[in-house]
Amino acid sequence: MILPIVAYGMPVLKRKAEPVELNDELRRLIDDMFETMYRAEGVGLAAPQIDKSIRLFVIDPAPFARWEELSPEEREQLRNAKMAFINPQLVEESGEEWSFEEGCLSIPGINEKVKRPERITLRYTDVEGKEHEQTFEGLLARVIQHEYDHIEGILFTDRLSPLKRKLLAKKLEKISKGQVQVSYKMKFPKR
Ligand code: NI
Image (cartoon, rainbow, N blue to C red; front, side, top):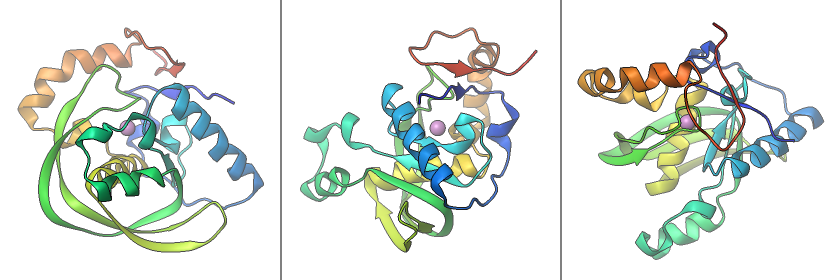
């Protein structure tokens, strides 16, 4: 089932999400989130973006990766990167910060460079209920860092400089008012 994606300005996007129990209902939700993400041509989707304040996100960077720009290691990593993260907890971020242009299905039409550390280590549960502690790097780390931010109530625009945010203020306000064209179903704040 395709779910509407909540737009910038909805309070759920600013809330720290709560832990969740893995059961059949959650597995169905995870399937719906993958379906919603693929339809919207996203590489990741966090539960707050479908109006659920729970610690869950899904990723699959493969369909939209620029394969020709990737190293063999990165290609191998991305090929097996359709993953769901249940109750992820940040263990650490490390390495040098690098800039990469990010976008977000909740903030259509805005793409900006964001600086983040190279690597992220997370503890999380997968759909089979298995627990992992795993370190990710490169593009995969980038997608995971962006989605992890969502369950902490942080948007990539929060990580931009005050000046950049000021320049984007009008555009962001338009999005929150529903004055935006997207090819997928969205949910906007009530006015
Ligand atoms: Ni996002």
